Length: 500
Image (cartoon, rainbow, N blue to C red):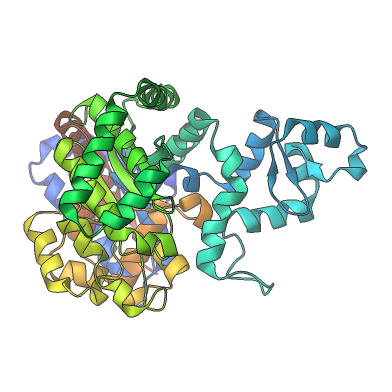
């Protein structure tokens, strides 16, 4: 058993070791070996999770590539946002009231008679506050016995509760995410920030469903409407405003210690015209920056994958991505694919989602990918991802909570065994109330990878980002320096630890 040094002493040892690092050419290798020994002792036998939490809180973790802005903000912050937007929350339904007349009517009542509460009033009513946190996040889900919905419904319902306050104050939210990331030694986040604008076209909907299995006809239909939308001044003005709002929210976020970039996304629960026009807007928005030089670096698709509409239109959506990728070949795409478990849908629904995301849509990263073992083409999927260097984004807490996939049942065991690159990420850390360090703790304690493998995962989060090459180089060099300091501190800790 080791007596742990205080943080200040650890920093002091790291500083001292770094000062003398240049005197011995083998010092970095020795420090890395000492760090590897220390880590190996923490996962040997029954993992020492408290010590692993300390280890990974301090370890540089590169970036977080599967990250939803709205789901990353904690419910407590959204309560603070109520007053910023002049809203209130109904203490019976826990829904946000946005109608100004209704809000003014509530404010005219005596405090004891109000049903719709301000930020301060929510904080003053502990029973309402606690229940709100349980509705707006997974807080207390696993450790209390009240009647509650299934976990997947609980998860996806939270967005309906805090949605009205998550659609504003973007800059303040990004600052909170940045500060939390810096606090746990994360230097880059690629967040899915906003859904790109869309247009409703019922004629397109009817025709798209008819053409879903007729590739030539579907491509002709998409091209015709794309050309019309390209010439639509109103549609293009909405895209310009969308990009400007992201640029405004992102202003001042990047600095010498932290970088953030943004994916736009489409919602797979909508009708084909809405999905296609939103997807087109996303591709056009990302293309404006040019090869990763802008703030918007990629396009994604979100929404519960087991939903009826998601399952019905899945292949159609993949064909939309294929078409737009052919028009905008430089735009990067990362796709939620295979976020399904046995029992979520009939078995045949598990057989093709990752496959089509790769081989139809041309995904450059796969998000979740947890139905891998059920995919009809699983060996070829892993070979394609290995040979084409396409990573999977691993979200352990999310997969366990939403789909019940964890431990030896998680296909990260397959991805690792067959050499598929991976990154470790958070998904919706505010909803499921965890952080990236915690994901590394879960990964290390469950699967006991080597320190070298974990370090590679950290670097992978820069390597497989959609950043411009110059930014990747810059962040990789920063990560080199961060690891040198971390390993110097770990080596000093190992030398001075007290055995007892």
